[in-house]
Image (tube, rainbow, N blue to C red):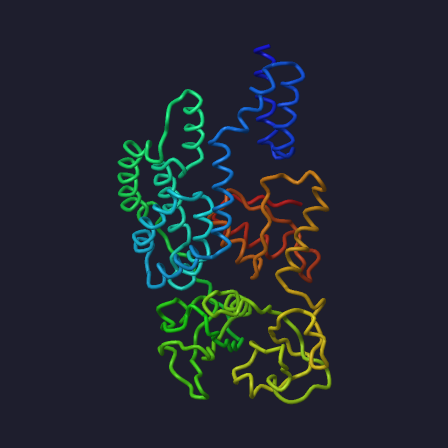
Length: 434
């Protein structure tokens, strides 16, 4: 029976880690086999599910997910990194508060919350996100080991200890883990700048779009200068002026509620600006539309109570830009139901762009895998040029997989332009699928 039990355990673990079988199904099957062959009493087989450590781990993951959705940590880290110019400064500001937080919530979720702020730092000061995220990930692991609830391994150890009537308190691990954590932080602070040297490649973007963003009353940018919150200039947009009460102010002025911020931006920069929480505008949705045939006047003349134009390819103010039939503009409104008006016709289906791309990606993956999609597969849509987005992702990837044929006009090419650029410039191994 010992050999049979070992085989069942190994097979169950292999099935759970393979990604081909849902982990819950693999575990339930292993427990059922154990009960059928009487490898152990049924109460003993199910006792692991009632382990206090397992239950607490599940509870902490739920709490961490809730914290992610509140956006509190994301806003706090954005403010901590607002005036940072180097990876060393970022690590110095983040390591203590993030370390303390990691002793109380799941470390994976905590590091994920730092990604937007790190990407913003990369755009504004060309500090590669990996130089911030990699050291912080190790710092959170060290700090999480100090408390009982900081890491799942501590909780599981506590659960096993309780079965042997050994009491484990919140700080039982601290006498050993805290000194190790502090020494590890010092080593990270000293070694990471040298081990993760290098700057993000500068990719100049053509900023042909004029973006006019109103500042909502509750925006976190109110009362701050643009340079202090990292919106004065990035690789995708640059702040040109602040309009207040019909007066044009320099971009160095403090932002007030009701101001209109005027940017020059690339098309990617338009959506990047709109998605930023700094302006308090995310209650609206962003759509790309084209001006309908037969419309006259300026872009502002085509607005109504629900639809507002925020970006167009022009150097003039939107209120003085002629509404040319067929011209692409970006508009905002509460929902797509407000869009079908005489002034606009849609470019394709009138739906939220992000939702459309996510649905297309999900459908494509389902067509390939069906019900056998690997459990650890993560789907993500990113707006931008195919080559530049993939090259950016390659810095932290183990491998990039691309197709061999592009969608360009030269059907005879054996390798698409995106695939060729990725294969030549990626910072990780590249697999080209023919």
